[in-house]
Length: 92
Image (cartoon, rainbow, N blue to C red; front, side, top):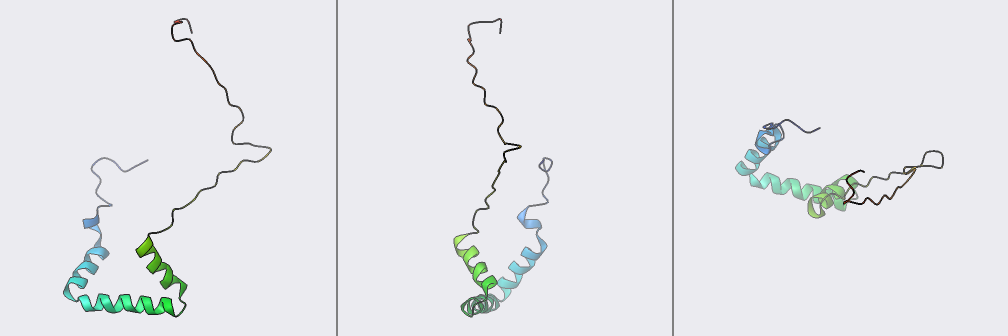
């Protein structure tokens, strides 16, 4: 169930941390550059979390896959019925 109409809780302008970070970056862009270089250096040194951060930002996060399986005792599909109906017959 989704949020009610008019709900703005997920609106980007209401994100406090994002807003604070944007202001800090605008005021001092050199710190952002240093932070990016630090992440890049950490990834080059073998830090997998830093590497994943870079990959997720550049390539996007991989799509999540969901596997739905049944088993012999409880199959997902028990019966498929194909029924042809005569549209001109009003009695059905």
